[in-house]
Image (cartoon, rainbow, N blue to C red; front, top):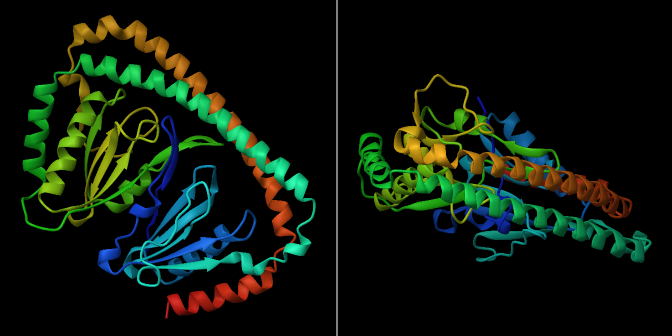
Length: 355
């Protein structure tokens, strides 16, 4: 029975746009990657949805990677059984082949449009620039929210018993992760992110892919991040292949979750936004926190939370406007596309891929 799994490969983060497209396949392990090039409205997402539908018909597991600027569209589809990835390689997450023909192949969807039918070039340029300006505004809201989040994290970290937390993490690793010798590999992605629809997360992905969960309840991420970094280091030293799911707002600082596919095991962080509906016993961060120090910081944390949420709402609203502008831009290219030719190409591609 197939299981639908979802990850974001990129994030509109408080640190800028962050992409992990190049991390979702391993050239050294015989993976094949098809990189689609083409403008907006050229059928890239629909093509990838056809691939996913075919995998579902075959009863194969597949991974959908939604677009953070439009979660209804796809940035990539991954077929683990076939070690194959089909991805959108256009801006802002531009991907070019590292090992052309050996590992990656370009699919040029520009060949299916008639450039003579693309009218009103000045209007296209104006709409493109307007879309870019809206994304820049959204980024400013995110950067401001990031400063608030960073202050919240540092405040919570000052209240955390770091040595005690780290010692606990070491014991947690030894208890749950057998020692072994292997070749480590790390795939970095995101379980959630901010979108035109607000903040979206996919906890069902972890519930569908792992038999065992170790859940850390920590709304400030300070304690859980110490534990996650210890787990990550322990896994890589022991040669495990892991999926490191970073925080979509502060990805260079915080790890939210870690999956060890070989063990069907995940270590996850739970808060008000990302909830795992299971009766698994939680590890509560408060056991590693000085209640007195935290109590003194509560007014500051409360104010931070209010300001942060206001900024994130403004960001999502701006991304929604950008999505509307992008839809307008797509219409110019859709009118110039030969979708019959693209459909024939898709049929032949699917026959070859699933032969």
